[in-house]
Length: 240
Image (cartoon, rainbow, N blue to C red):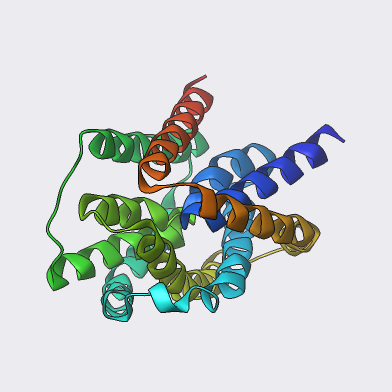
């Protein structure tokens, strides 16, 4: 019962964050799902549920999508996808795997808190898409580079959420297919994903309510807290 309750809590909270911020599901869910499942299972569950969320939300917020950036992200991701596949198929030490994710999240958080700034350009869009593609196929987390890039360019929260969700539709679908081809899949992954769907739907509803109430300043503070908590937790879990 304790494991089921933890699983439900992870999915519900992560769904709320994804809906209200545009990036929270994979960052929040993946580290904690690794406590309950094998890496392959945790990553594929995360990808499946993230894809469901993106499908459910993207039509409603389509007017805020920057289509040009999404296209560049997609083109760039083709360079990162095979790199991610190579990483996930060669890593053997689970603690090294978790440690790498925690360091990535904490580095991202530090850059954000130092008010990292960058000027958006088409070349940088391609690069960010490539990094995001590699992270999706390897650890199921496309969000960190997108979040850093959009925050560094002072993108408003509506555009950030909509554009990342539109890109997720593509990258999560491709990553799921890639994962199944190179890593295989199993019954646990699909049963757990199906079991989680009602809580994802509830999270979507609650997240939409939350999104209407948070301004840009609160949005950024909320981002810092989420990333710090997740990064520190996973770092300690991988070390001890």
